[in-house]
Length: 382
Image 1: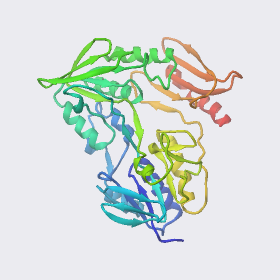
Image 2: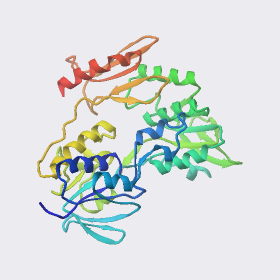
Image 3: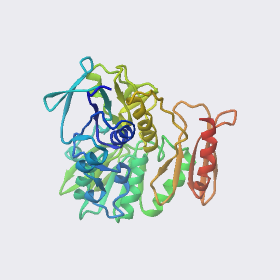
Image 4: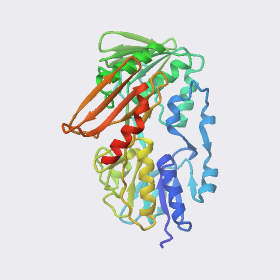
């Protein structure tokens, strides 16, 4: 087996899971992980529900880079910059120095989408995409009272619930007419909105933020509806954009993400991608379960046993204690419609093909007890 290292760019869940799974199969081939930050391991999904638990950034860090390196028996290089990939000569440039690879894994993650905001406060709008962002955000809201959140998607709703439970006044603005527009039918969205409003969250839907002005240590947001919102801190949670620039510059095919087949292979034989940066046969799947599935498939491929990734039914738990929610969204472009049953205690929505075949579901409140049954139905068809 070649002693050129397996090089992994990225130290998030995708990168570390690939490294760990690979080590179970191959104890000898060197593995070098390159991280643009501290390289420590933490649970990124915890970032959006840590305030009410009074967890600091340091408390969320499970293991630092040195402990991870020793545990998995890999080399972790922290706070480095990869400026170039030379796919033909199988080398990358790290802090200005060439590093050869046998196989290269791109686990680059994604960047927060930045809205084209105007005003003196636009540059100070925060986002939370990693542990350092979380630390900055905690510092910013210390001793403050009110927070405006841009975006009523999954992360925006999770932050809203967490922050209001931590005692903050929270207002959420979104262009869509409903919450979680990419995941829920209207009736389900109305149910979770009602539960969050009962906790104290205020929503401004069907509105865009046009201007953010900063004066006297407060922000004034001007909405497209003409409304003005005043807040101590503004958090943007409008979504993520896969990091593709490094790959594209190297001639690696990109679309919404870095384009890979079901072996997670790019258009270069020994270069692979997974996680938030990857587009797997047309699908971008930025959730924990698909990342774990991809990493477990890629590890044997890297060790010489080509293994396609298979995605089972993968319901997502939305961390909104005010309204327990589990969603298994249908694939983009799936043909069918939502069938919704609701009570005061919960809402069950099933996305069904015209033939009656279940293609996805959304369970809220008391209806989450049906998660196992519906997941099994989806699994039987996957």
